[in-house]
Amino acid sequence: MKAKMNFTFAGASALAVGLFLSAGCASQTATTSGTAPVIVLATPPAAPPAASATLKFVRADSEETAGEDGKGANAIDGDPNTIWHTQWQDTNPPCPHEIVIELTPPKTIKGFTYLPRQDDSENGTIKGYEFYVSNDGDDFGQPVSKGTFENSKDLKTVTFDPKQCRFIKLKALSEVNDAAWTSAAEIGVVPQ
Ligand SMILES: [Ca+2]
Image 1 (cartoon, protein in one colour):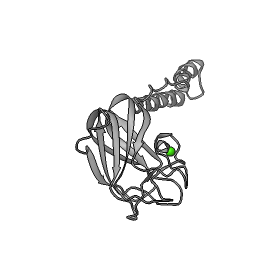
Image 2 (cartoon, protein in one colour; image 1 turned 45 degrees about the vertical axis):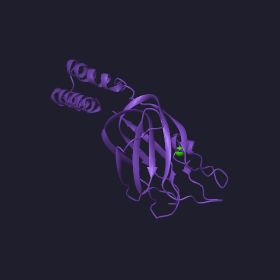
Image 3 (cartoon, protein in one colour; image 1 turned 60 degrees about the vertical axis):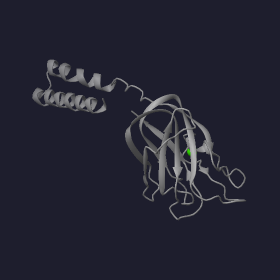
Image 4 (cartoon, helix red, strand yellow; image 1 turned 135 degrees about the vertical axis):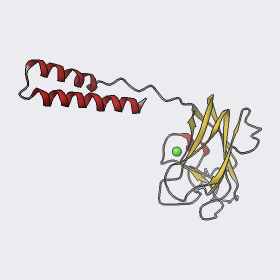
């Protein structure tokens, strides 16, 4: 849709420029003809909203809520500056860690996104991962995707064959510096 709009824009612009150039010392007719498509371009139709699902935090195996605000819900609040972080103040449970998120309504998704914490620390940034989907929130079966993230602050996008699901689970198998923790600024899905 967007590519088509851009093509239309470019084509119309070329037409307008062509009309302008051919008009020379703009006659009334050329000016009127050349202006019309520009007016249309000034108010392009709005793009249709992307298919999306509301994300709801369900559970995580560990959340640090005393030493910092590291609750699991921070991974789906839309704010890159808030994070889910597993416990580190009184105990440091080791990987793997996991977080379960519900999609409302259930969706067919073809991938997920992981945004690591965006501050100066790497603590908890996921290295090895597995990603699961489920319809009941209990039986997640085998992972639909597994791999290793590059160690950077960049948004990671992982795609797979489309899956209809109500729940997703991201399991962190390891941390970039092999520490015990897991953290996430944002976790999202890629709708089909
Ligand atoms: Ca967040």
